[in-house]
Structures are given as C-alpha cells and as structure tokens.
Length: 348
View 1 (tube, rainbow, N blue to C red):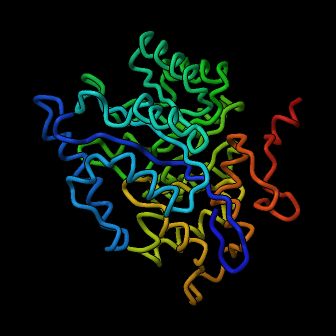
View 2: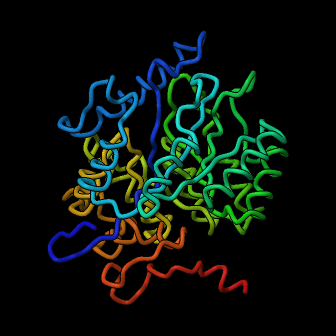
C-alpha cells in the first residue's frame, strides 16, 4: 500500500516476471539470440532513473530475495501478477515459464497471482500443458506472445484457427484475462508480428474474455486507441508506457496518456511495472505525482485525478482478477472497486 498526502493506493503490479536469462540457460547454437534478447531488455532498463540500473550479470537472473525486496518491501506493491514468456528456442528451461513463476507463488501465495500461457503452434501437447498449468496454479489469466519463434514459425495471429481453438478452451476453463504483448519489439523478433489488428477480431468473437493489450500497441498507439474504444472487452496494459516513457520521454508520455484517457478511459487501464526491466517503486511514486506539462499542447486531454490514479494503479486489475481490496483502499463511493465483472451481472 502506498500513501501520499493522506491518500492510500492499493497497488496491483499486473505485469511482472521472474526470468532466467543466464548463460547457463542458453540453447547451444542459439546463443546470439538468447544474449541479444536479454541485452535488449537491459538497454530498455536504461530508460529508467540512473539509480535503478543494474549490471547485466545481475539483470540476467534476479534473485528471489531481490525480487521480494524490490517489488513488495520497497515497491509499494500489494499483489503482483506473473506473466510468462517461454522462448524455448533460445533458453533451455524457458526464459520465464509458468513453473518458474509458480515456484514463488507456492512460497508466497498471498503475494502473487500466476498467469499461464499457450502457443497454438504447440498443438495438442500445448493444449494439455495449458490445461495442466491452469489447474495447478488456479490461473484465470494467460499471456500470449504472438511474435515468439517456434520451430520455423516466427509468429502467429489470434485469428489463426488453432488460436481460436485455444481461446475457446480458455473460455471454458475460466481463463478470462488474455494478456497479449502488442508493443515495442525486442531483437530478434519481427515488429510486424505485434500488430494489434488480430486483437480487434478476436475480441469481437470472444465476448466472454478480456483482452489486456500489454504496452498498448506502441508504437501503434492510434490503432490501439480506436480499436479499444470500439471493443468493450479490450484494456490498456501500461507496462512500458510508464516504465519506458515517464522518466525518459515525459512529453511523449503525456501525449500517450492523453490519448489513452481520451479514447479508452481510466476504467480500462492497468498498471504493470514490467519488472525486472524496471522496478515498481519509482513508477508508482512518479505516477501518483504525475500531471500534464503546463502547455496548451495538452489542453484538450482529459485530466487524471486521484480516483483515476487509484483505478489504474490497482483497482481496475483487482476487479478483473477478483482481488479483495480492503475497504479503506477502495474509492469512497465504491466505484471501480467492485469485485464482480459488471458485464457478467448484466448477462446473468
């Protein structure tokens, strides 16, 4: 819980990881890709405040003690949601798997929620793995990486027939929160595989699922905003937006936030630190203090007040995941803090 000027904020970090990109985990013959991937992540960390930067050796595989300290003890986070990215073509045991994330969840079940993942190119074997992980960790969310390499394939679309089979199964299993990486590319993945157009199609066809577009489609911010305005079950995941832009590109950050607030609205935006790229502490504190620059360039954007920041930092994600929020940390009128999806009530 973070408190500033008498206001208390319930913080849900809805996008974070516990990865292993150490050289010991690199696939023989794919070392350049494993090395290049984590070095690209490390370069992104340079967009945060200098005092938060880590040496690459530490960055490659953060310890459990460091994660717990930086996320919870120092980072103001009340609940963290693990998102998986497997990358088995480059990392022997995977880069950031459901099982690795789940090992911390099993030690600290009050702190974490584990999302699993699926890749439609894995076929029936992948379906069994998805079902088993969903059951084992009680997952109600999944992270999809449409640009991930898999054999000879360098990406898939949510509109692929096999992807629809997995989305149908997710809906049956109650895995209702589908987090899709649609944002800045990481070498050596293909930028075009992160296009947001397939989310538009799938969101219309799967009204029982919520599609949280992580990184809001950057640099395709306009495409995302118009799509998320149209689709009531599409949400804006702010990982990278806050961590990558708030400190390094403050005017561009203000523009992106303004577009999101105008088109998507504060009720459909969720905070994610993208740990361990960036730590949550400075992001939470900076976002609570944030306002537009004093310039006419930002005059036509909606203002973001304290209640809106509370929604974005935790209450919106709490609603999506059924996280119990203490009464003193909810909005005074209760708005935004309900634990029941209003669409489900309307359909009942």
